[in-house]
Length: 424
Image (cartoon, rainbow, N blue to C red; front, side, top):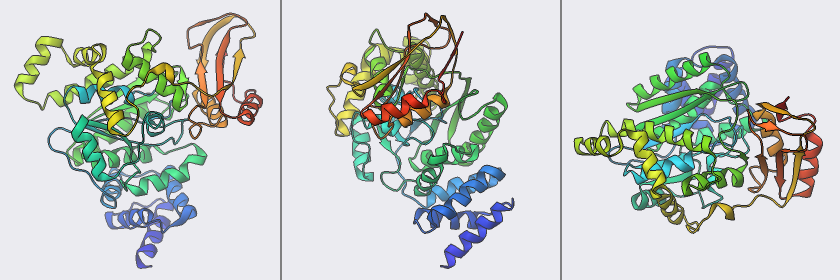
């Protein structure tokens, strides 16, 4: 009861805009991780961070306390990781980047989240291919066999306070920038990562709206990374639409596998984004590798994006992904075209000629959730058209998929309130 009283006092203090010290923040994280606060009080704490924000010192304390109140993994040498701050559906780069890095010989134990503000998190998508819930010992075994894994971070008490905060944030479809930062860094530190690339998209319809906010977030990532002695590289880019065309677990996963298999119908934007992330991550890992490997990469591939491209185009990345799927208990004999969306579907037809000017990612997210994603793995939206593409009257703009007739009916009725395309 004493600890709970201390946590409640700290939350009251934060609600009126005062800074918290480490002991106060630890008391909150400890109560959260042991599920002793309840949803209402937890929501008050989440809201206090959203409205008032946290100082840099508080961010460090939050991250440290979140790590210390949960389990931790330890790996030797260079431990790579990548993360996107999220908020953009249909951009599943992790399923491509992880096997590239693992195939290059680096350790990359990827802790992934389930959906918070999108119709599918990386863990939801990987679950299409294999289980993602594992014990600490099983994760060590998978990584020992394959160099990598793609698992749900909440499966064995890694930063448990974070998963409890996610549950209260999910219904409102929002996370504060500070919460995004702490959530990502706590999982990285707990998983033993020491070389990290963070994807920071910004745009009108994603989590971060302006370049100024993206740069502020980058500074905070770099501050925390320095405190925890982690090498980090934040890649900022303007984003107007999903990198792929599929939105929802099975549609997103199918596109990632198409890239790994180098299928003719693979999404070029998703491939380019993934290679950029993989190349940058390989670069910061290579800088701390032995001179012989550095010279080999320079001589053979020119640079690390060239190295990543060769791993992808040669089939090594797909072979590595099959190894990871098998080690995680899935079927390694996967083909992208085996991944089919729900049988109930409905195409949205263009009523005029024009060019696609805008895709409302948030509206697409709402519709995909109405269709049943991410719980229904086969639910989602396929974008038949993207920004800049010509539209002729009668063309299909996008297609709704679901496993339930009821969900399809609800989504069709909701289209008028949540328009996905602007074209003229």
